[in-house]
Image 1: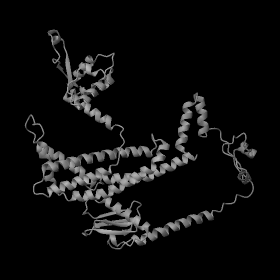
Image 2: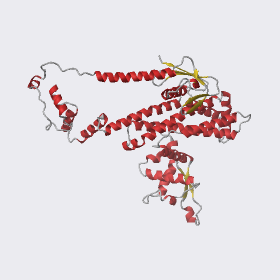
Image 3: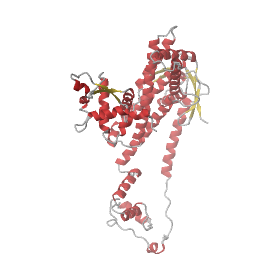
Length: 500
């Protein structure tokens, strides 16, 4: 038997007038936004077609529990009018909740996600406010609760929008529902958008982790107790009188705060969600560039197997009969009787001197002479000496030179980066811009693995070439001087070695 509480959603699946019911409920929701509580049937004429009776529709919504009908005695002047049934209608609690849920679904369904760098800034600011309040002998309850509520809202929006953006980005990479010209026009902005967010996420995640590390267990319990006590004052009393509102709310806030820590810091050896989001954004950039290359190849007329199979599927669908489809399959997949042709050196030389376009019909193309023996016996044995093996010495030399150049370049970077003992970041004499950029990438990989600012981290670079050991050294700050400025950050010592 269906749950009676869900009767308020019955109008969505009504066999008749479902759209009209939905329009009526929207009118009531809009009136509630204007602080209008009651509506009369004649006030709903814009939502109800002229051929329908609004009274019967409203009565059905009352039966489902969406609306409540109250006698309308405000305009009664005679006994006859008093005996005539007239009602004003308003939301029930269940009906208003159902309409609010549907409105939220309509607002979020199909909405594009985003990577909200500003939400990270707000989270940092609210954590700083919370730490400032916890440092006081008596924290301001209102400011602390407001900071926690704002922190929760920003974090919830950040996580939801990041998840939606990940799905949208994956659909873009898979080329489903994406206009090719539109994508090529904004690809640079999309890649730049990802790169800026990655930089903000790495910097802000480290800052947020450091702020969370300063909130110890005792401070966290005190914080959650303050927020739960303030929120409990506005909760309606429990009918049974058995529920401790403060304990219930404190447990719920404890789960929220634990989830917040896990999203930015991780827990029990698991990778944090912020690090997964960073890897998603990093991996999306080469995927987008690969998609651009595929689009370029398609526009240049190069072979695209996916496009070829789609065109073939369309031909199968448009074929007039099964016999035509069988003939098409035989041609497309080489199921026709085999005709083994063998081209000799003379024919190849002739084609090199006089090329034949691929669009030339077979009937108009120069013929290829084959031995009658091929048709008679199915085999062809060419007489004379075998063809000369092509000399690929020049190609091999080019490849060897490129490999050697890469090896020399990597060796040059290794000499500047590899260290026997942990060294301060500012002690790396990085004159080469390539070595400097590689060091920054390695530091970013190590910082993304760290759960707390006080943790020592050992990780492998993304390409698996280097091992990076990062540990705090207690210094106030370290500075890495570069050609375009000075990078200043918390004091750390770094050891970079070759991965074994």
